Length: 312
Image 1: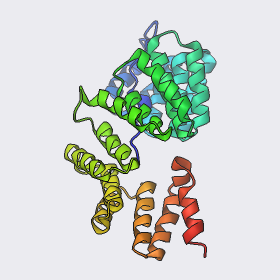
Image 2: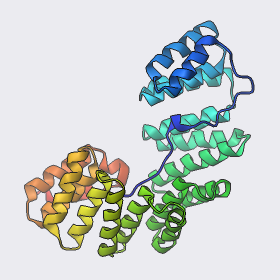
Image 3: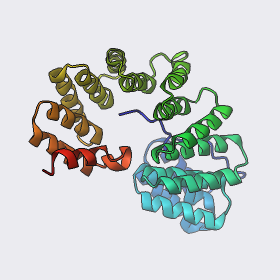
């Protein structure tokens, strides 16, 4: 399982309003957002909207709070309402693209990123829209398009961690792993303890069949973050591929104990169980992986394994 680095909707601080509203409820809401009190902030933004329902900024800020609380439908409603008041808003289309990406609607994420790019007036919007667009293309397995998008991001920000990490992973999918490693190298030159890059080194070397190097990188990742479930899962799988089946199983189990919703971990454990001729356990894990959305995220491998091992 590779690590994809993506920005969250509410992490953006690039919104600049030509004239900042002075409504007291709105200003109080902003202070509550800074204090990570999104529930209370929503109430204040709602008061501001009730007093002035044609101020699009109030809807945008309330949408960001709803997103923070995973109230995705409410966030969508507020963003679309803001567009009724101020169409052609590049920032709102950018937020919509992030919102659709969060709910795994990658095509709509692309469509809204395209709208953000169409109306973009500043490079910060262009950079972020190209990033979410590339992430969505990667999620749709359109890795060539994803690479082109990440390269556009790097034109605006040559040290963008998300773009550098993710282009390396897309290049791996295009059978250009060696080129992908050069992008990870650019990260560790100035951040030797970058967790995502360290894990992605491990993933690339795993795919290249250099399991010893893969294991070393995942061990390094666990020194950076000891309970990282992705690193543990992949460490276990690399150990399994390197012939250390029992130890690999222990690491995958430890990963599942930390995060029991990672579909990839159940796929890995199923492969280990198949190696151990524990077919019933393997099939249980394969069905779990499928139920947890493996196919949507990674393709049909698990479904093919179920057809091969669990339907006879």
